[in-house]
Length: 279
Length: 282
Image (cartoon, rainbow over all chains, first blue to last red):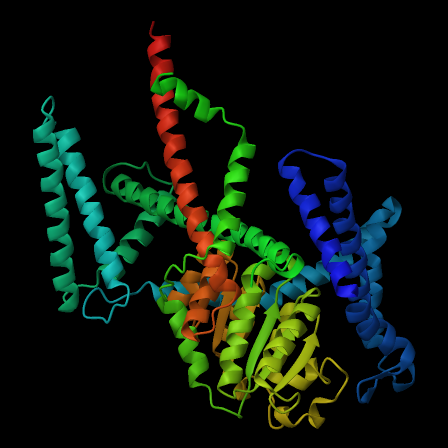
């Protein structure tokens, strides 16, 4: 019975939140404020019992943590007291006259994290990524080759169509000739796909790696602002824009998927957990 | 009504009609499942293979369930799928969380999967609970797990838990999996992969997935699940369809609807834009 009650409460709050899609209303406001209030209360309790109690209060006042005695009597209480004091000093910024004191713990905090993080972050985000782009351009077992070659086939088709129809104006005023030019472009695109597949299978090239390296150089060129984007640099920057757009498109698609997943989760809760209409 | 006035109307449509369409598209597959195929991608297959290679009843799979309720629909199906895979193969599992709101969610997923497979607490699985301080916790796990988790989540000393006997640090953990809706997955790369060479796989929300492919490509992650789609692929691999699989029909329909709306919106924009240009030219 209690489970049904709380599930119903959850369902009503879910519907209240989604009612905002129609327009702002008191049910939405109530649910929104409830989320903020409950979250603040929940996190306050969690943070106290997981941060302050075991790391500050217990070591200083209650003498024991786990199997070790590290309270006042052990002489190690200062190991908790000093960080605790620094934590309290952070709140000095609320008092203008002594606000400067708050910079001390902040400096220690930032310095500590910088010391902790610079080396592994540099290693993970710069050095390893640079190494990962030093790729063999031929003779590798390439699991993404099929998709890459297919994508390149479509690119060849698109470029050829552009050259035939827009640049050369083939079939201007003649629909049959225009369709013929597009069909020819499709044949060329397919032939490109076949050739790339044969070359990849033979280990002559790894189009995935070549594409990755071109994309990297193109994108880096786009963000190189010390020279005018003309000539080779301009061409590379244009290629970089294409790769950036593809990247943004992928991010957008994933973002849509993520947001829709949340909606699916709530709909599943309403239909399955609350109404028991679906298995 | 000519075509252009129709496109004019489309551009001015009340967005609530689109919300309604999306709502209908999500609900219908719950009642009429399409059973669309789920194709497994290499990053998911790679994580599955990693778990599949873990020795049974030996060194544990360490799972860091680092998500909050806001990302539950995407990440809980992943947790359940990986836990089921491990338990089906009698792989020991140690679960922890780095997110303050993750305690209850991690425990819920762990207990559900353990109950399904009749696993015994302390022998087959253990719940270490929550520890604050993400980077410091991960770095300390590499030195000695007992420095960070002297006790399990229920107050039992790790030395009294049979499964944790001889498990000291990352040297005794063949694989760590982080399931995170925030930057905890990156922290695992910075502080477990780089300093200790720990094998780490990640399950992240779809929004985050594109950010993690470079780590996968560089070999810093041994597998990657991206959003509900990743969970559905894993469920397909373990042949245990559940929440992820069920959601993919809705996902597919919604994506088709959104593509259609984008195409219609762009066509309407260009058609009406041309019209306005003609009007302005007199």
